[in-house]
Length: 186
Image (cartoon, rainbow, N blue to C red; front, side, top):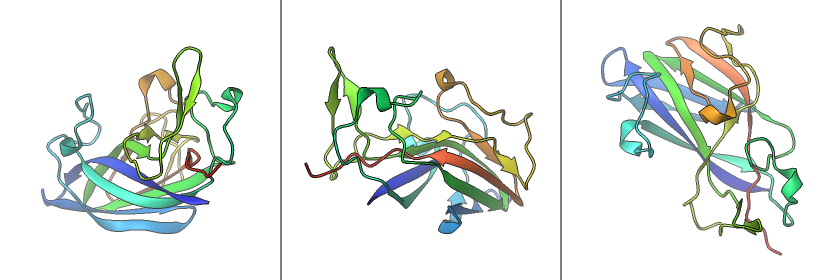
């Protein structure tokens, strides 16, 4: 098992105009608790592509992930062209002192198929050059209740990764499918 970095790209509307408090847990283990700075864009607003990290308050956390121990079979891809770990991971976020949208969640150390014919490309563990989206794998629950007016699962893969709004004093919980770590020793 290896450690992947996960980064959350957050848009923040802090009550005091400076920062809101965000707490993030994965599988019941707290991974981050701290301030996320006010952003120029409000939660849920459309951000510029290609992604410019300066638009967001960025939170980086570490998470254990299964390793790919042999070259994967092309047929093992999920609908997002990724290789999941077995099962899913419960992600939860709580915010106080403002509203936050987790506009994009990404993980590093991701391999991919490319070219014609398709060939497996693996990135060395020392590189963080290839960040890919982590997708919501279940209907989010805000304080234990689904709210389809905010988010309806499943999202359309053509729309890209989901954006999850968390209003002040709310906790949102949902499952994420974390890609396997593509670093392995043959």
